[in-house]
Figure (cartoon, rainbow, N blue to C red):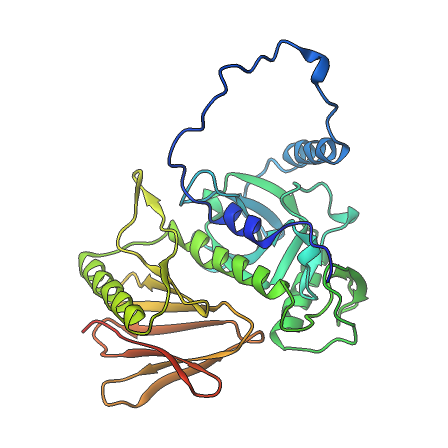
Length: 354
């Protein structure tokens, strides 16, 4: 088993921290007048500080453009780790498409572009581009620029993303925690992680955390809920809780965005058992919504939407190759959500509000 430097529980708590309940206690007996016990700063910390200062000095221009890496602070809690997003293209007036970036290169997969000296200077928050994790954001709300990739490096990002989406197999042995140098289809020399190994590969869980981050953290600030949608969501939450109790299943609300100092209600995202993260995203028209489902575990599952007459409206298998599903539905549709094991054993069932 490889040695990972960052524990998954710490990564999870950094991105989705619990809110501070009380102010930390201060040791009144502490005396900082004695400098004899002052230790020198660790080398790695001094290098990180220098890299951050250098990146801030170099990347002061926040004008959105392809290749720019921006810092998006949390709309949920101020103590959450900022997210870094590589911008690739605009898709509407204020929204850009891109890919999430991270610093935990020990969890790099074959679809993670590890940054190199040619990409410097970059903030220490950015050490690789998650080419498997597309994201959307409003860069006008970014707090800082963390780095910028050259056009040729953007080509490499798109190559790796296309390779991932096509499900191409690589003649590289799985070795979690290791990096390899290879060439993409267009001839770009890249440094990446290795392909996934067994079902126990911790990188599956790592990617689930960051997929949730892209879905929850970057869309929460733009969430607009009408009174009718609020009522529907409240009834949806009641139905999910009742179903979870019936199926003896754990149901957890995912951290909600903050608006005017208070948590936004009703809950718009739920963790259903250890199988699925289900986010409900209202459509601006106010009469429809998007179901954003993110697979959470190693074992594949099947997600179904059943209409009132019992017929299957939509059916999806979620697994490592297809971990995310987006479905658009009307608030007026009478649907039932079902989750199956791939053996067709029913794991969970919950009706949507009428």
